[in-house]
Image (tube, rainbow, N blue to C red):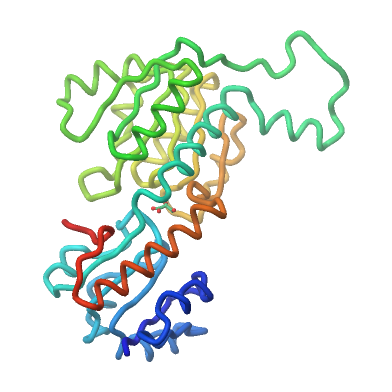
Length: 304
Ligand code: DGY
């Protein structure tokens, strides 16, 4: 029997079904219990908001497997896991479509000022049709630059193409001059790359200087990919630009300065939040953790 500790109650019924008689599952109620239970744990199943650093890993001498209920692994000290031969399982593929759909949702909401329209109606301030009421931007024929040509980037590109956007790519292998030339063309800039020490603050003040004054920035990946201070100052100085964000640099904190701006559409990190996707994430994660505990190499094991 494997001892499997959950940092949070992630689909307990689905977990019980998958681990059946092979695992004893623990759902600690507080930090003290969690610390106690993880001392003997064979596997830890956790969320992207739980920072699994060296110190925490060292508190779990029996740990063989970590299951992260996310595709992004920036909350985990991966090189230390590798050193300790701890297998890391995550949830790629199953959340690709949901995240791409949310990127398109953010873009269309921003382009057509949907949150402002909703607010006006809900406050009872819609007083009649006007030629200049909430004029937005059309997407057809404009250029979307996507940073990150992985699964989510490619799926987002398909959806962006469907609304008439022309697609240009930047990835981590693009040269400085390619990045500069491409960024200058962006009517839309959408970010789809993992957060690593190398990509932190990828979109910084010097890149903002290259962007058009009316660019629409979309981020469904990780907040720290953008220097949030530089973003706020760019949006303040360029009211025809805008940002559609699902993630934040110091999540869950959202700076007041950002939420007060009219040219932002803000969502609470719900890229993968559909019933279908969250269930599929749970199933593939639990199945992967079980296989890894049994000495197999599941398809969703991080191979860094
Ligand atoms: C992830 O999986 O990394 C998302 O941010 C949450 O689904």
